[in-house]
Image: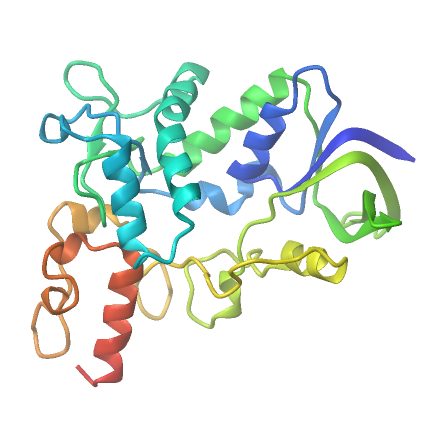
Length: 291
């Protein structure tokens, strides 16, 4: 039987980050239904937020202001402790990624470039041209190989192996051979992404249909906030090809069918830089009204 100390299910940015975090002195393996460099994380274009205050127009930015923008953008539905922790950790995380070799775009002086993005009160979005997710995944994947993380690509987890209320491993389906077998682990981490594919129209990849969440649910793991499904408010219809959120940060704006810029009716203080949740709801409201 194959056995590891830590078994991570999912090869996107969350899974790769977890693999690196646990790779010091432990036997870590990652199972992914696709090659990690094919995970949906590579589709992220616009950037990643952190209050570095590098942009001349964002010198007063702080993690507290970042946390406020995050919580406000959620209509105060976010877990505020989690939002604060994320915004605090964002700053050292960006520098850690930089030191690993992530080729961030740069300002003229050499600092990591930051630009305006939806819902942000300051230009705090760090980016690597229009392929931020792509370079982040490559960087973490390369570093994990350096740390001898084992990969099982195109293997599908079908079930958690639970004994007396404790997870002992997973049941695997090898997509190439059709073989089904158990895999043992001292700890199992699920990083299988979201389930945007429950909707007909979505920018999510075809692999994002929530099977990992379903596996955990069938094993009796409690789930939280299932109504919060991440999706992008702006895409090309009907192909669903995503239009980067940076378009709004650079001055792009939305019109309804009578040519009116309608976002001022929904977020008068933020205008087109409103968070994607508010933008998506505004678009749906306009459609429902026939505008």
